[in-house]
Image 1: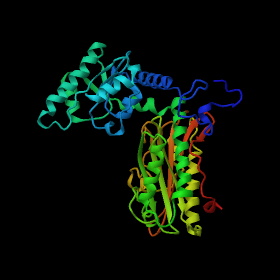
Image 2: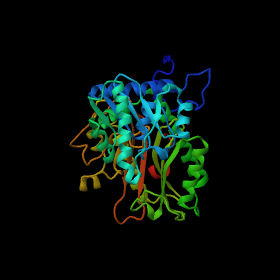
Image 3: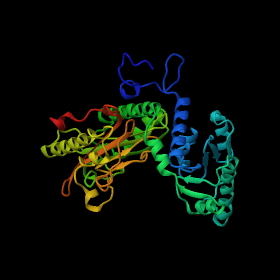
Image 4: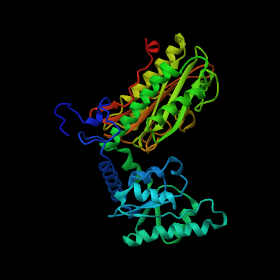
Length: 418
């Protein structure tokens, strides 16, 4: 692409959003290139981690390597898998019946490398026998490519699968370091798809604020309207819409109820959804319903906003997760040495949690490098015991050569920041 006029990569410009449809007159998201680039990254990391093959059961990993998606419900229930041998292309083992036939029609780029998945889960007394058949199907691919004696990476542990795969003599090791390293660095087309998802989520936030959010509606109503809007716009899957209002913000309740929303309530809305190209948006805004914020609410909002942007400023190539975590307020992550997911950041992509978390629980002592083209959701919280209402905010960004570039653009509440 000729960048002489726009002066920077197209994918770093959040207001240069491609249409989701294809056309002959403009280069848009190039899905052939997307699939090729993702597969190349997976192969590169296989070599770096000395793996003879990857055996993948996690749906997002299967999609990353094969480009095949058949609904969120199939993602993590061990009814399909793929094998990527060193120096070869992936073989997809798809659910038999209509699902396998759909894959044959939908994914010509696999060139027939689609075989019947042998599903062992929930087979009661037949589990061991079925798992052994699954292992034989994997072994067959590995032998065809002469890698059966090498280290074989598996992405998620199921004891029955592990026993079956080791039972046929395979040296099974952890595939997550390789898959995480591949996926946390985004290709240009992946960033374009994250931008598209963010643009639709921005539109949903506008409609929440200006059309749907009013005294007398329920939290569940807002959830329903956002689901309706995003599905009408072609989203793959609406993962979760969290709506917490009034007292449900303190302690922050990360699921909706049928509570009625009252005038003067603070309302925290967290949109988690998979856009039309398969990539997540996950961000938060906090609104005041039909009233002006109190001085205490302003202070909470500013505290949350300022810590959020202090952390965002640290997302520069060469910085580390420690630099980010130092900007998060002290919270239960410090108290318990675990992750609250409230003063927090996480990589985002095909999965809501792509592979890299940032928390004061461990990032201060175990820093990881931040690299160009990583994409993150950054979220902060302001509250304490005794408060009736609290505040939470979140943004999505891509790490560019110049630093962080926001992908979510819906404005914050001026009444709170004035």
